[in-house]
Amino acid sequence: MTGIGDGVELGAQAARSRALAVLRIRSRALAVALLPAAAAVILLAGGSTGHLVGGGWDAARWVVSVLALLVLSAAAAIALVVARSRPAVTPTVAVAEESAPDLYRMVRDLADRLDVPAPSAIALTPDCDSWLEDRNHPAHGPPPAEDHDDVAGPGRPAHRRSAAAPVLVIGSPFLWWMRVGELRAVLAPVVAGTGPSAHPDIAAARRFIRGLDAAVAATSAVGRGPSARAVGAGLGWVSRLLLRSCRVHAAEMERGVAVAAAERAQAVDYGLRIVAQEQVGLAYAGWDRLLTRVALPAWRMGRWPSRLDVGVVAALTELSRRDRLAEGFASRLGERPACDLLEEPGVMDESVSLLAARLFHGGPAETGPDWAPVGWDEYAEEVVDRTWRTDAARLHRVLDTLGVRRAAEDAAPGTDGPTLSRVLDHLATTPPDDPAPARASATETQTETDTAPAPVPETETGPAPDTAPTPDDPAAPHAPALPIPPTPDDDDDLAGTTARGAALAAGLSAQLAREEARAQVPGAPTPPPPSGTAGGPTAPDTALWDDRALPLLPLQPPRTGREILTAHITAMVCCAAMDTAGAAPGLDWLDGPSLLVNGVRTTDLGPHVRSLVETGDPGPLRAWLAELGVRPEKPVRLV
Image 1 (cartoon, rainbow, N blue to C red):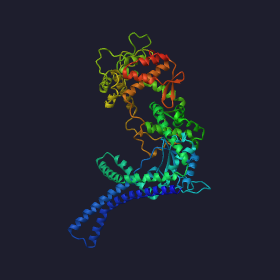
Image 2: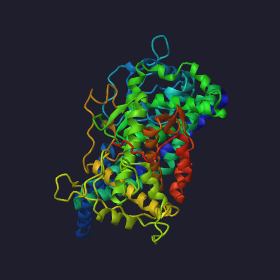
Image 3: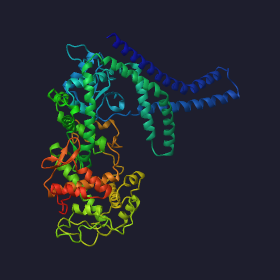
Image 4: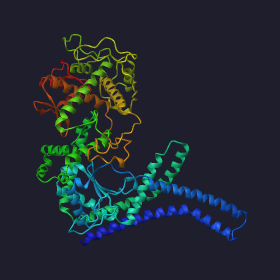
């Protein structure tokens, strides 16, 4: 225990010394601002006493006094901006004490054992991390009205919780995947950080640094007028200069705080923490897989899964079943999960799921016809089936635009609808007299797409009329075609495909871009949800953060042309399998949408589709279709 105490003391001393260094920089900046005023006071006092008289001294008094006024005005403006700028706050879902009394009790008991102040509140974030966050700035609202002076409860030592206590932010996947003891062990070093945070010097240094950071952000978003831009540039330059001067000391201060907290937490559940850290890495892997493979397709369809935290438990359980390296993890599920510390875990999971959709995809703040929650039991029908049929419909619309015939000349009657054979024949055959190179330019493809008249897609019951809608026709689309500039990455990505595949991929990319542009309303900020409405009883605290630049944390970079083409062909194959071979859409917790044939997930479709895209060889895919009894010449149902 002596070694632990020495480590805590050394870390705290290092943090305090760095905090004092930050405060000294603040004091020096104040001294520089007051120096012209002090010189002006000396000159004015000398003139009034008759010591500094004459024309030169009078001119000096005027010049120094004016300079002092300008410097003091600038210093006051900088101080006002630093004091009033709202520091950045992590988007979270607040957890009221009434909705999680057991969780608050556990955190307070942990703070009591660590002999540190208890956090002022608890919040959840859709991330696999936990930290302390200071939210005592006036712009973040008043502190909670509840009286929690004796946070330890009756019969236990009292820790007075002041308004300066930070908020404990917990990653929501931890609550659902970890057991109560594991969560306690993981939170121990985080809660221990409230001890150094309560020191006045460290708290003052943090407020100063956060104020400078907020001032830089505020001055960069100043008004459009020339004078406003000039003033904002000056204030921003001074704020950035001070921030750069404090950078090293601030980093070392936080490192000292972390060292002190880690040393103090060694006395609490140290052995269990080693085991719990393994669960942290596993939860992160499962959460990332769930968001990118399962949640993202639903968000793109205007649906947001309302039980993401429940889904991460299912995903990690599935991983434990498949991966022999993860054996034993599923046996933990018999213990009490940490989500039992919440009174209504389902309501909290729904709020966190909606916040995750906003952060990672930029979805609206409230539900509506185009942004509705979806349960896991409805995912296959509402998301997977609709996604595949929407992609297949888009694929045929682009083929119509490129002038590809619906059916071959010798095709049987009734096969002129949207068929898989149309796609296979187009990508597999190349006219002998076609001198097209092995790769198509995205610019040429876009020009052909924008200038050629788009024929009306045929319906499922019969061919389309011979005439296409004119611009004067009320039924014609009025949205102009948006030019999609080619990028070197797209050209390189399509270099290994056939000419027809590259042209089709470029057309699909352009069509997707136009659809996304039509779905967005420029300059319209997302309104916050009214209290007690769509956000539910535990709506995300959107008033604390700026949501004008959503998504804040995009999950994946934009898909390449090859990936878009592969996804659309896969969707068309799955539609044909569902409509002609009795297959069904399904959900795989680790891989996302999947095709079920006789109740078994198919895993060998991807290589066959890639062979068609890259080489134009439909043989492997046709053999796979024949083996499953899929009839590619039959029309499929689209949306």
